[in-house]
Image 1 (tube, rainbow, N blue to C red):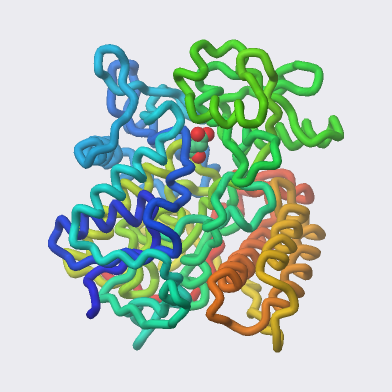
Image 2: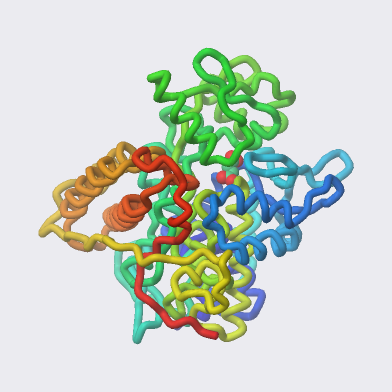
Length: 531
Ligand code: SIN
């Protein structure tokens, strides 16, 4: 039986949508390839940025200005206005749902400062275990609804009939293929950190939703803007343990091999990552250092980080902590309007899978959980209102044009060179070897620093791996690799075309920002905008 809304993914965006849709009286299904609680949300540390108090001079306008500055000219200003205006109420709603955030002795929400923020406005839970607490609260909430849960199901491809998305083809836990019909389908499958050898993302972050959207011809944009978190612990554990920006907000310093500070720790992430990468190259080593020795009550304030440091044999009170950048967050994704509608009627996207335009070329710290919390309810409201297709609002205007011709709206260019998938006659390596090969190639040629030569060499390596993946299969592990290859090759095409350095995309052969390139690179077929 078709549900009203089929949600793919179980992170903050997907579960928020499911809970809200059930409350609105829709029939809802959640389909996830793991267990409900397994998502990248669970690993998010810092918190949720939202202006909940104005007594220190903070305001939604200040949050807007910080987000636009971090986004390096590519944010959609209307989408950011929605984010900062609706965020505070969504935080209160989440608290009402059962999420417990850290409070001070007087019971007021504690507010932290992070890189790129002009004020302390980040609420957090369990010190730096914010994502885990949000995931817990939302899993509890969704289990109290009548939502149909498909855990351990793997979505293979979107079902499209007469141009409209009508559900997905999916493998059940035994590997049997089924059509799962839905009047509306929401992609909330998270990001694509598994493209790289060193990442803060869990094994599940394989870009499945973005790959399905590319195959179904839905518009996808800003794939070149993979954000690398500057302060992941340099350690063999994977996902890389994160040393949250909140540590720097509390005064931790970044030091070079001689103990000197070489970058302002509270600048936006792309700037700090570039500075660390340059310093590591200059020193010829593999990492620099985070000095948190001056932080009081470390274990009390950051218990989960203290535990991962203890597991690595490090004591933040006395040891300098080795750090290096790690792939963390994709700012682009499936292009949407202000209500999460994609260019395919019946198909919606939110969270890291989506390109709402709020992050531009570089996401501001702690705006990602917030994005899921703000845009998922807008999808539900639009579905309830009977909407079925994109409007010319938000980032979607990069694809369908801006009816008002406003100069502050970011335009779009059709991205060229989305490579076909060369299916070889048979698989030549097992999925884990293919994934490792892909991650090594992407890390070498499309990581923090890129050039035309490194990107072309990487594309060649990925084409060989794609041929070695053989034809489409009913093996979820292999299909995850095929999804990674699909998104990875699109990322390479976008990164090659963007001949400038902007936000988290750094071209060593084009080191400056080029005002003539203030547009999105959009893959996908056109769809008419609705009034
Ligand atoms: C962090 O705590 O540093 C990560 C939070 C985020 O990615 O915004």
